[in-house]
Length: 177
Image (cartoon, rainbow, N blue to C red; front, side):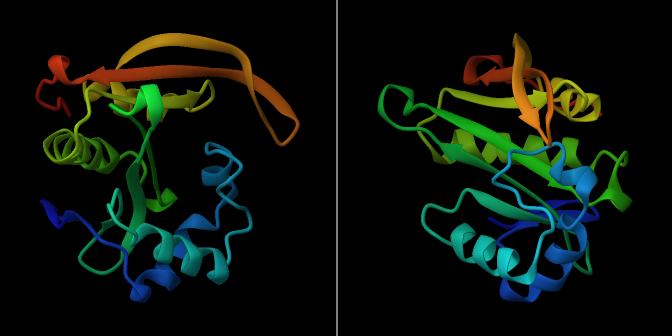
């Protein structure tokens, strides 16, 4: 996938992205809003492992990139069994690029890609209660709040609520920035 988002683009990860990936991912403010599988500190070894994993088929994770470097990641995890027509969406953007609408554009592109290339009917994401910006990214792309998961997440000893958002293929509409 190589999708142009104006100044930004979604593209496959490459070994050349390792320094930028470490630079932006090694930020406690990012790791605090993601599952514990996302490490902090984020090392060169973590970046190499992620890039290798992201290249496996089918490719479902992509670099969000400027003209110069990768600045974030977006992708989805295909589910299996009775959930095989669903995928969990995830994304993050390097802190210097927060608040610029990049995640909203990237999510709109990944939604189109996921529904066009996979037999999916539903995309969903879980957002920590403290991450209102991420919730807005989902809402701008038509995701609807399905549930507040009370005290469902414990991150660094702090237990909090999470919000479950979902988008069903039938509810697709254009992105509102």
